[in-house]
Image (tube, rainbow, N blue to C red):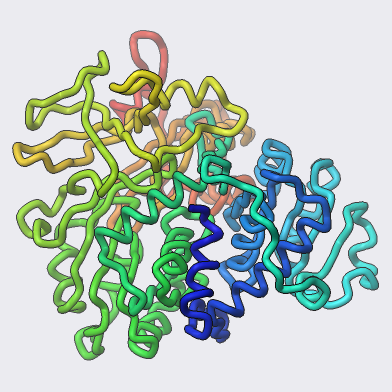
Length: 517
């Protein structure tokens, strides 16, 4: 099965059912299918080769969802770019995977217009909020052909293109922060994504009657899969841009009769700070899922009080395989800090430093994952791929070494301990301390800098920077934050800054982050 068939099969079975609610629009499966067919025909007409890359740089929207399925229908590979990523990093991403077509809007195009002359592979811009772009003088500076998304909907037929891919072909690239600060493109095949979707749908017991509220970005795989899975099981997804206005989200839950509500701890923290939640009727919500970081145990009874009929699923996953495990809701009270056991069609086990399985309860080791959901590798990074995809128990197979330390209890339930590397997860975003440290070192007056993650009730983890100033430097915390704001994504900006006369060092002269913690 191909990911594009999630839409096609539901459109055939439920053509007039509402599939997507977004920006005050309500589109049926037939409408999404026809729009995706039209855009896919345009992509093919523009010369998108099989497995060619299409980048989507849009807020969560109807156009973003249609563009994802259109790319897949055309046999291409889609990547949704995080809107908080700075232009220089976007330039790296576009060049790294040789993006052919970029789909964006005027506002976001304005922020990256300066880099496009350095991205020779991009031959076409599709803009979602203009009419006849070819007569618009503001775009004449681009040598790249610029076309209107809505003009394409008028121009091309709604006929589905011929299938060009099989399930081992790539469907998506998701760029994540690496420990060196250079983004890594996680290569996901159709088989990877279909397998992950099947497993998650199975344990969540999704049905066509489910209505999912998604307030997460589509660049975040957790948010992306809410859309993909809902289209697969024939439900309805209500897509919001963010959780910025919580009371609006609350009204949506009630108005749209939401049954599934995926959250991260940040959303839970913001929600639980609101007053008078008990007066609202959330009885339609049958489940809440959580990932990115574990829910603080004190949140669990509070959420259960507000959503009395909801089953709460605590889950663990990583972009390289989407999802690994889930905790059955009936185990939540007994094991509130566990992320459960491996999901259907997936095997997870713990190994020691020599790669041998650990059977002893309570002993800490690295988590390893086997399954059809495990990524193909990192784009253009063979050595990085070899570090995490290693020989498995069956000759010829590769398994994923997650880089995360876990323990297992006597009943086989998994507990996350920490990451082996320095990557920090801030509100679900992977943050590279190295990248922040590099930015800090570029500020005149900074002698040394070290960054770690610290526990935070809202974010799960927050960024803390330790800084040693050069002699005579008068830099202030405000100077540091201003510099970071200009050079880093918002979620990378340190929440805490501590000035030190010196930083602790190991015997080899390296900064000891263990001592900073």
